[in-house]
Amino acid sequence: MCGNNMSVPLLAEAVTVSGTERETAAVIFLHGLGDTGHGWADTLMGIQLPHVKFICPHAPKIPVTLNMRATMPAWFDLMGLSPDSPEDESGIKKAAENIRAIIEHEVRNGIPPERIILGGFSQGGALSLYTALTCQHQLAGVVALSCWLPLHRSFPSASSGNKNLPILQCHGEVDVMIPVQFGALTAEKLKYIVNPQMITFRTYPGLSHSSCPQVQPPNLWSLQFSRRLVGFNKG
Image (cartoon, rainbow, N blue to C red; front, side):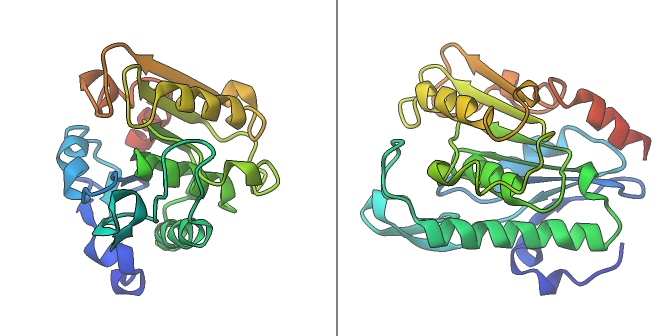
């Protein structure tokens, strides 16, 4: 595949799990606060789809208000974790632009946007939702784990209008960091942004703010997006 990764800052340092054959699809997965792309790359390697590239970028290190301004990997600043907390609007929009730059890079290099899945955990899941909903391209879908929709008050007017965007939300029922009720509120909000039948919201008893085998690949991908991934595998 041609193209210069150095022209896309996040892509230059990202952890990339290449396909074993010609890559015709991509999954871009965004880690949570304080983590790196390495945190999810090993899990994604277990899928082993020959035509699919997995891209796990690293968030930049910035001061995070929620954590006493400590510097850590974060896609944008966080002031709180409740639906009415102030939000880092400029930071969220800048982060979304950076993820869209990765999408554009893959499109320029021959992967159609409808064969690109965007996903993430916690803050990364939040950014994946915002980015996909404001992206000019119709993506294959979004996998949003234990997260929320940033700048939710700006929707549906902020949406790019892609009504048929499949979204799979997964949330632990005993998540104390981002309570499952916030995930449920997000799912209801999303039904006003895309076609309601495109939304799948799954909860997991006993699961806190983490992942488990039921919400990790390959089981995760075998839920709503299994047909798309099978399609990816055909090349």
